Length: 361
Image (tube, rainbow, N blue to C red; front, side, top):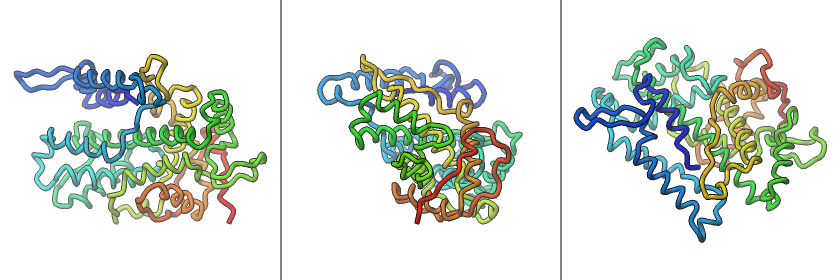
């Protein structure tokens, strides 16, 4: 989907107001002000892509933009960081950007995704993770994390990468939902699609989460959180952290499941299904793309917390099955975790009362 909204929001909230507003570059001082996502060159490129989407022939028959592959995105990020190296990294002997991005950040996400709130990244628990991972990955380079250090370059980079992780899951959810049209021709009919989404998102039952839900009796459904659309979205998390390492100084999180990542995957799929039923994932009649609503905590935090609390009812075996199903869509490896003992205590949302049902053996 061609949109700068997510990137504009990211830059608008980085380093105060320095990168907010219209993009400006002062040649005399080589100073950048404003949002890079609003740069004229970026807008020109997006306009060209939109024009391409409204072209005749093969392009005219496409129902949605071609999704960028993980490999292509990685190449772009590597090129960008090579062309525009961070001065902060240059001034830090012993730290290279590749290790920071591929090992440090992925390990931070690996452990932060085991906390109960995937929308947060500046709590005391997060600071403890950042410090422990730093000491493991860069033991020869002193750096102290502190919640009061708002100008900490590392914290800014962690915030940016965490945002990208959440955005990655949201994008994978849309891809997974759109693939439903290839599995059943009836999904191409909008009214049928709306009816199915209404069934899939019905509170208390949440049919979209089940691997097997073909019975009229919901009590016969099985495989909670193992449906293809959920598993494919959850798999994006494991792809994102496939170069993460083990941090021995975080033993309290070693055996905790990635509940935050699964909960984020579930609400990402909910969002994708809602948008799909509104038929906004396809180009408008004039060929332009619709700007999608933000995938943010304001809309999804309470619902995410509801799913997180429902995980209290999952057994170790069920967690292993859920992770194994997700990993069937990726080559990343992750050992089945032990049930998380630290979850929210009070029900916040209807999802919290959802009782998962594993597959029958």
